[in-house]
Length: 396
Image (cartoon, rainbow, N blue to C red; front, side):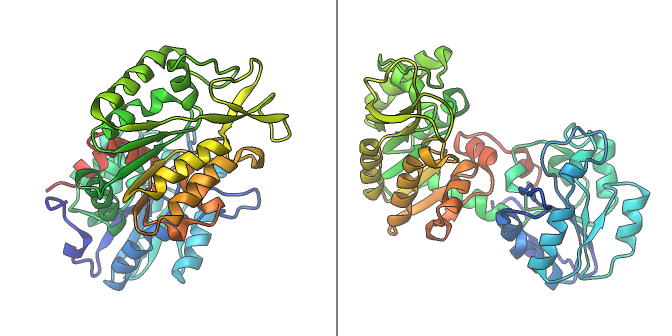
């Protein structure tokens, strides 16, 4: 990131600094943030700016509001309360994102103050990267810092548009995410094992293809494994599958063989007669799945096979669960993989955002991972070689 300015280059004293953060955090019915991982990840950047005497104006989204104005279900109010606890200082929540109301709140700031603008996606112009909306955001600040790697793959007004209008810098989280992920891909310690799960082959095919050129072994789990099993000629019952992607899966298997990359697929699976935690389940060979039942997790023999490969790795990248880990009946495969990654203390272990982060948090293993990415979609696009608009906009 040599051609991108770091906040270490920003003289923030007395300046209004607009900071794009990713505070898209889950909130329970009582209005409490239930996972503050993303808030904590932004603290080094925020502390740096506050220690330097900046007036910090935070901008973030949460959830997927309609873009037609305020929606209580997606308010950043709960985030403001939790951030106040983490920072140990008052957080002013501006009920307006831009305009006179927001300007009045910002004009009243003193050095060391923090204002959090309401959900930026309450305005539909955000996702359209509307120039006028970007200008309205820029009018609130003297400098811009992007520390929201989780939204770096979106060309929105607060991630790309405003960066062209103000002196722009990368926050510490943004810098660490990009340097860690690109460093792993450019020069991994070997053997390099990539673990990919999730529902659909179509969502991960570019990532699989890109990692085929980088990794020594690819471990496949989650719902997408059943499309690969179809490509091997097996029946998969009523499991999630993508018939249109069977040929692509078959091509990936052939490519792996040609390149000498080990591609590990389930040898046994946990099947159920319904998508429910209390469904009737049994463990069957991947080559002998019964009709009328669906696969919802990898089986114990597969878990042992995958754990063995992970134990031998010097670098591990993991994105996507092995099964429906949200249900206790189908969490064993994901937990086995998480335990194996955590147990390999000699390896560089990178968790590529999304449900994998939720899994390591569920199993209290986060502290045993080398690096946990805050951006599932962004990390995937970076891995597959895509340019990230939020990063490109910061280049000098």
